[in-house]
Length: 421
Image (cartoon, rainbow, N blue to C red; front, side):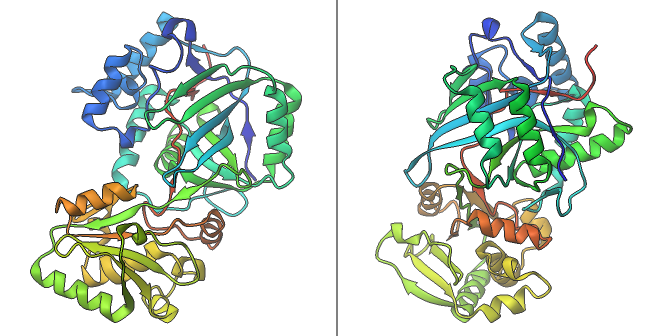
């Protein structure tokens, strides 16, 4: 069972920073050099300075900067533990407005397994080493892992909503994409007890932040014994939350030789029914019983819908995998096309050698029209229930199989991994 606790958070002193707006940042892995420079220029206290450090000794620099902020009183630690409610008002890639509600807490680090914590995607080795070095240096979780839990009765969500009803948020920020993040501190003992007891019997499914969770597990074992290092910062959202949505991440390939173009065409004709489409907008498939994938190449730029001819094709290509896994379009594409026709290895996929991702439709089309990539495959959004089914079967989906939107900003809170002095 999962162990969820309130935390004595490290947090910005809003009186010194002028609020959170100029000090938070997107997750480190979506920030390019230009965006990082803009964030640094927005405030001398922007979290990107320590979450995505630069310099000859970047991890040591991050630790020194965090220590300096604490010494200056810019970052302070709460005297008493609390949970923190986060509401995000957003417009998704589908153009619909929603509100997603969740809670920030610390969660005991466990081995993956039934009834405790499950992953849902495979991870890459590089980011884990980077995050481990940063954790060793700063001795803090700088950004939360996003996980899901089941709350069919609404007990946990109701307790949190009741605790903050009628109160203004402690802080709020607006992301560049227009997402409004509102944060409340929940110190009410009854609300905290209801949430922790409700989640005690809940299995947690990691939606985003697998690298950071696996880093936390390695770090906890390195330090050994008991203490704050045995916990990690999480943002927990109920599976029943109406604002919880999953969007697809599209695949693109480049650097194809003439022979590979022909091999790809043969594989598509062999395994899929090919339906020409009239409009580019028709490339976005819906999740269903049949595996369907949108396709366009940079040469002809004609859109097609690929429909797997028979489930037995996926069964043969993915033998040894569970039935829910064999129905994933990302798994079918990886087996039949990326590894099959194009002969990519796991290492190629891990290091994006000839492979790219696009999290919105327009970006993928632009990369094809500019010939930056040779072909694009448009994936369907995987329902949360199917993500659960794959995880429950003990399997992890291919990398970037899901896109949980919006992201959770870094800098809302930090979780200290050492006892206060």
